[in-house]
Length: 191
Image 1 (cartoon, rainbow, N blue to C red):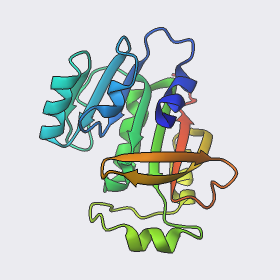
Image 2 (image 1 turned 60 degrees about the vertical axis):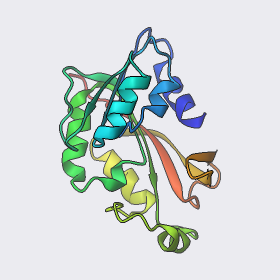
Image 3 (image 1 turned 135 degrees about the vertical axis):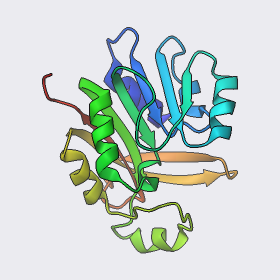
């Protein structure tokens, strides 16, 4: 799983990383991580959080107001997969992520992008009215660089299978043409 591999790449050598998923829904991503890690998740869906609590008793999951994180302390890793494009106030969420990420910690996210040769097709096919940000890959990279150092990024081709799961094909070579991107960023300041 590509997303899990991204997380593993930034926690090597950390005995018990503390990880927060923004927009954890039913907890499917948290479920593929090491249950001995300190796992946290937040989502605006009460139904999703209830299901995550039932299936992941080792994780702490809470309903999210979309801005503040209801857990004390900072995290080694914060992830957000296909969530940022739904959040109206990107300045506030960037500040929240920054404040909850420990110095040297990593922020990993995936967003759809609407530029490049596939941009017009993606705009036409994307009927999700909750996507309030239909932006280019360069918008997201610039947004990230305002607070964090971009460590690496990939383009992602993906196909929906059975209305629930995606097949992901990450690429660096064609990352300027893909309909989604994955970014690893780091908080590099010294506190």
